[in-house]
Amino acid sequence: MPELPEVEVVRAGVEPAVTGALVAGVEILDERSLRRHDPAGGSFSSQLTGRRVLGAVRRGKFLWLPLDSGKALVIHLGMSGQVLLRTPGSADDRHVRIRLALDRSTLETGPEHGELWLNFVDQRIFGSMAIDTMLPTLDGRDAGYAGSGTGPWAANVPSQVAHIARDPLDPAFSAERLHAVLGRRASGIKRALLDQTVLSGIGNIYADEALFAQRLHYEQPAASLSGEQVSGLLRALRTILHRALVEGGTSFDAQYVNVNGQSGYFAHSLEVYGKQGRPCSRCGATLVRESFMNRGSHLCPSCQVLS
DNA sequence: CGAAAGACCTGAGTGC
DNA sequence: TGCACTCAGGTCTTTC
Image (tube, rainbow, N blue to C red; front, side, top):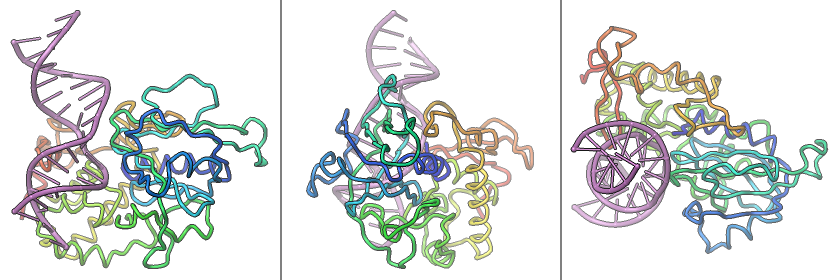
């Protein structure tokens, strides 16, 4: 289940491979992966074929490749999406839904990097690809993280990403706004953390880990948190996201891998997610898994109590 | 506007 | 061995 660190690993992996490349061909193997594509602006293939890729940008769990047409290829991995870079003609990965043939032959990168396949793989089809129009950011700052890339496109955000809040690793993230938004929320803090319009990039795993780090129960009303608690939670989120990023993301199985098909190592560092029945590293109590919002919530019943 | 529920998906795992 | 069932969860849509 890719969250911010996993998506950033993918972004960083594709950026050097796709920047400057020409889309030479588009192969749609499963139309369901285009569910978020609005055909009113033209078909997916026609808007992509012959276009040049300008970079790779990420906000939260959304990834997009700005194109020289002024639009962007928006990629969301959903639950099981993968972006795999392959040499043309290589054996098919399972569950390839869309394949892009990229031509890098005009780049000064040597003949071995001339052509490339970008396979969008997605077992459960919660992810998607789409061509989307761009909007200028409201604050005029860069729309997301683009690595070393920059250009006039940097301050534009795809229309279907515009409602998503900035993520905690974004230099333009507003802690003040987070305090204000949480102060108005009566719902449980975990629900707020998972709401991508409050802050983005957090999914079930990192929400549970950050709440454990701050000794907060998932149903603690967001508005009941003190300013210091919100600040602490934000610090914990940033620390955990950054550590996961350094370790290449969290992998439990073959569902999350980088662009070369390799797993990350952060699963070894998890404190509560998937650790039900095992002792809390802080107090020794037995960790539990409870059902909340139709997903598992992992916590220490002794450290994390409602107040 | 916020909250909650349903829909969308497939493969792994479980019980009989 | 096979069948029915449950579970995993990110985001969008609908309803209140």
